[in-house]
Figure (cartoon, rainbow, N blue to C red):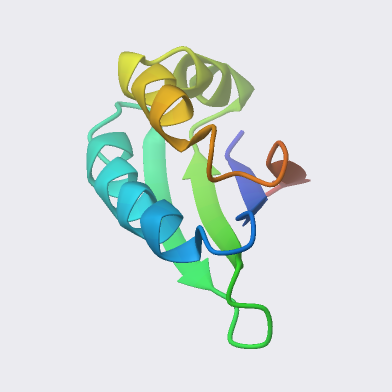
Length: 94
């Protein structure tokens, strides 16, 4: 069953531009994953340090595989100094 995920990602003060650039690069890589049906990035107009990733996966297993992808590790290592904390995930069954 498809799984929707909304990930809220918050940048540390002054790091939104760097984080945004890295997130845009990440989107291109994630979209090539077999289980990825949708991966869209949005930036809040009210809180520009806040980003929302709208994701749709084939299933929970696809989301789990996504978290283990090499490009996710590379992103985590690159972005660790820009993130205010871990992403907040909201999962919605379709």
